[in-house]
Each structure stands twice: as structure tokens, then as C-alpha cells.
Length: 403
Image 1 (cartoon, helix red, strand yellow):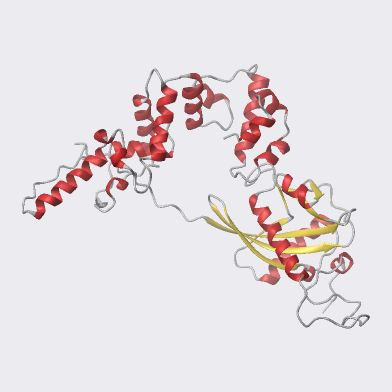
Image 2 (cartoon, helix red, strand yellow):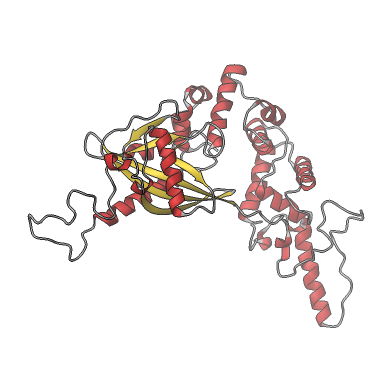
């Protein structure tokens, strides 16, 4: 959804349509789901250029004509903004409807999703559809919550079959205590075999969960594990402040169009030495000259969880004494100061990477106790890099000596 910053910078569709994708990504940075910002701008451009500046006013047209607009967004815009009597189904509404009707099947299955949309379209108030839909979503967000729902405060509890089942279970337990245990009718029994809305026969009602038996969800797949080697390339700018090289990601796929430090995907089972070599080869392709993997200083690992990916960044750094001519045929790249980096369209993950680099640099700059030496005394091994320091550009680019 657009943020306050978006609305202030681009108050109209025409203003958003004239913005560049880079500007949109910069303002969207850190919010996640970066494709939404791109789709938002694409939709604005289409409305301005192909629809004479007029937004579609029905859920059907919104979903059909605008990129990135799905069933939920279309229903919300059409009902709230244009008064169309159409339902809206989000996570909160799913929970409310599944409890109201004791829907015990997997709430993400196509059959259940279609049924929930049909139900939402039947229930929506024809005179005030926008208010009704917002009230239903608010009910799920504040009362019919995932855990510890406030059933005693629910305005529709008398219509809720999950709540009625809990009441019947309590009555049954009380009568059983006194030796009177009549059969409990199953409110999920719709009289039709293999009902797509009922839970599998192997799944039993858990009395300890109460109404939170609903909705039932399929077990989530664990996020896919990925490893990426990334290098914080640093140089001294014209005013002495450090500058960092960032490159732009492809226009499609994960984090499309955002900026990052030079990075390369890694196989899961690589040894550290091989990871360095992979990254050095990647940097060599950028700079067009031999790279010595041993010149990369290991910083540490940074973990970032995307919605479906468990990403580990293996972070290295390299200080460059001077400029480097980059291959213009590769992705766009630029040198930025720290402030420019944070103002650019970079992901939260890359901000974590820079933070790890800065933490390591501060750690190395702290004086070590007992390391003082007399003024004028020459450091051991003068003329060659001290252990733990980064190599210069000349040393880094020197071809490895033969064994």
C-alpha cells in the first residue's frame, strides 16, 4: 500500500506516472515486497496513457486492466472508493468466515478460497459495501484474532458455529461429569460426503484450542536456504569520506532493480577458500584484471529472512587505493557515500551488510592494550601489510605467484 511519503511526493496518478522507477524504489526501500512499488507505478502509467487518466471503477475491470492488482486489491478499491457491492477477502476475513461457518479444510486450498469469496460477496451490505468490508476486516484484526480471540466481546458470536461448538463441548463435559453424556451433534456435518470444506476424517477437534481450531492451514514449507558472497568495495572519496561501490540488480526476480554490493550466489557446500575464489572471479569479471582471493577480508555472515528464502550473505571487504575502470557492458554501477547509500534504493539486507562492515572497521580501529611503542620506532614488517589489514589495490590486483 502507498505510504504517507508516497502520497506527499506523488499526490496524483499523473505525478506518479512521471516518476522514474529509481525514484519509486528509493522511497519504497525497506518496506519489502519491492515488486509492489514497481507495479504501482506501472498501473499509474497505464491509467494516464491508456485510460485517459480515469481509474477503472469495478472490481472486474480493476483486476483485468491494471498490472499488480489482484482480487483483494480490486475488491477493496471498488467497494471502498466506488461503492460497488463486492466482497473482500484477506487474512482477517478468512479467519472470521472460517470460524463463523466451521470451515475445517485447508483455508488456502482453491475450493475453500473460492467458497470464501462467494460467501463474502453474499454477505456484503449492498448499501454500504465499503463500510461493511472494512468492519469485517477490523473484526478479524481486533476481536477474532488468531490467538486468544475475544469471543465474549464479539458482536456476531450468536451466528458463529465455532463458538456454538465450544459451548456444546462445555455442556457435554459438564453433563459427563454428572454421568449424563448425550451425543454431541457435529455442526460440521453438512450431509454430503467428501465435503471440500470439512477437515479430513483423521483430524480431530482439539478441545484445548476452542474456536482457534479454525481456520486450518496447511503446514508451511520451510524457506529455501540460499548463500551469497558479497563484497563491500571501499575507496576514499574526494573529501576523505569513504565511498562504496553499488551495482543494480536485474529488472526482474528477487529485489528487482534495487542496488547492492557486488554479489555472487554460492552453492551450499562450498568451503571458505572456494567461496573467496568465486567472489574474486566475479570481481575480476567486473574489473577485467586478475584478482587474488586472499586479498578479500572476511567480515562475517549476515542472515536475512525473506518471505520464502532464508538468505545468508557471506560478507567480505576490500579497500581500493584509487579508482577502478568498470566494464560498462555490465550492470549499472556507481560510487556512493554512506548517506547516499542509505538514500538509494537498497534493501534492508544490504543495510545489514554495511552495518556489519562498519562494526568490523570500528573493532579494528580500537587500540589494543600493550600495543604502544616508542615514538619513531618502526612497526614490525614495515613496508608490507600488517596481519588483519586490507591489501591495497595494487597488491590485490597482483597475479597470484606460482606455487
